[in-house]
Image 1 (tube, rainbow, N blue to C red):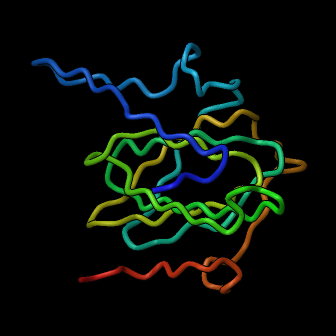
Image 2: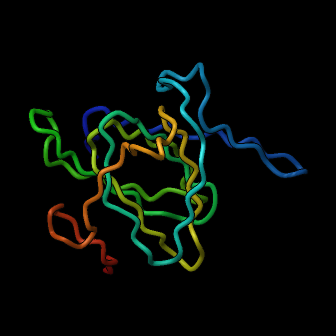
Length: 153
């Protein structure tokens, strides 16, 4: 898959032993690290679509720590060499990766499987409750050329 300009994927390191495991997500010495804003957990119930939205300033760093999510990105940026490109990632326990989502790239998630998907985000900016850097688009409006339905076959 050709990645949208500015999007990065990091394969996560899982370190198991007889007690359990540790999974490193984002380190300050990672090439992809920019800065710390906050860390939060977002949970999506099976079959639920959360999206679309984008940020004008914030870069997101998504990791799914429990369950599986389909994470979809759309490059709406005029003048971007990847304008109009869609990236689709299946993230979670079966595919431990971190996805970096730059500002102005529209994104959404859908929990797939039979259990909720737990997403940890470490964005570059703290959430501003008085003036959120969050712009929403209905997931089924047709504004984004993507169909959230399951693709059998």
